[in-house]
Amino acid sequence: MRVLMIAPPGAGKGTQGALIAAHFDIPHIATGDLLRDHVARETDLGLAVKQHLDRGELVPDEIVLDMVRDAFAAARDAGGGYVLDGIPRNLRQARATYEIALELEMTANVALHLKVEADELVRRLLARAKLERRADDTEEVIRHRLAVYREVTHPIVEWYAERGILVSVEAMRPAEQVGRELLTALEVMRPLVDHVPEEARVAVDLTSLGAAFGASPPEKG
Ligand code: AMP
Image: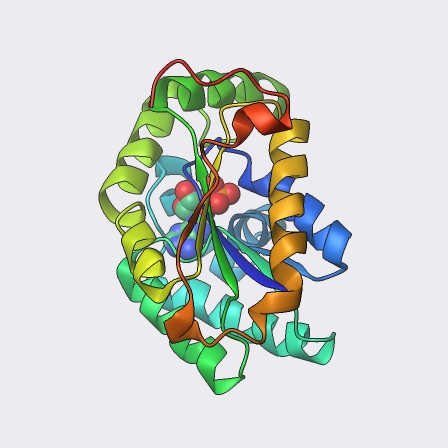
């Protein structure tokens, strides 16, 4: 299974990415974690990107694309599956990630879009800030990261819808419910993904399925 996730900060992509990786026994490639690790170890790369992370700005595309190139090569050796968390963040990264994956015959089967409203994201991120003390979880930086998501990341959702690999999930619910729903969807798709040609696929919208998985419907769209 080859999955990439598109989700605003605070939507739960780290949690759900880890769940998917454990469920399918595939590597969890999280560019934010890789970058924070460089910052913590004060490597040259870490020193170069620290300010970007602290301000909630995207780091230069080439840096994260190099990470993905290396991580894809390792994932191929480990069996070929992966869950990408944190990349692509803009259309250029989306196209470049696709090109890299195409060369390795490892293009994503599913682009998983986690939908959460902005107010809820701010609430979750401020709560996380108290627990984790991440440098980029102050209210000002949180609002900036959400604006970056809205302006440059969210538009790539449409690109995946056109490619027919988009699966949208309502993530305004407890993590366990969201996780159960998305693992069910991925399991249903698993036997099909390698057999249905990309041009014959259609986007899947699960956002109205919440009630079937034990949730009351969200108050707003
Ligand atoms: P995340 O943990 O995914 O929220 O990422 C934390 C921070 O790492 C972001 O605010 C960016 O500064 C940086 N980052 C992570 N992934 C990328 C990416 N694909 N492109 C550019 N910057 C990234």
